Image 1 (cartoon, one colour):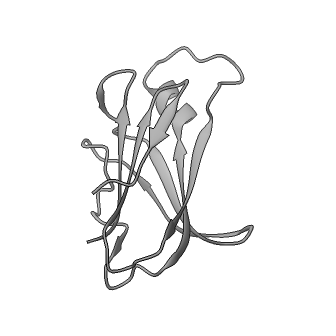
Image 2 (image 1 turned 45 degrees about the vertical axis):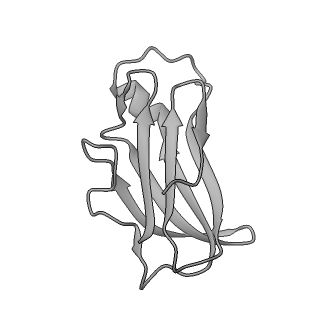
Length: 117
């Protein structure tokens, strides 16, 4: 259990391998960088959980996904400026003893997320 993420590239129908991601803790307008990582071939953090249950705390967090950089590296012809640059998801953890999975389904023009299992 803990906190995890997974990104699927809906334009190409595959995991978003190579996408850069940042994890922050937040308090009001203040954000503190916890870690930067690049998604593995399965579109996940190569180190596994972002936080395990022992270290996940109730509070607010932000995941920032480099959508523009990812699709540019895939060779997608993007307009300037691109519609989506970086997607920032702000979310709360109310129950640190539960699993919080934050998936992102993304294309150069749209994204969706939800609390997964």
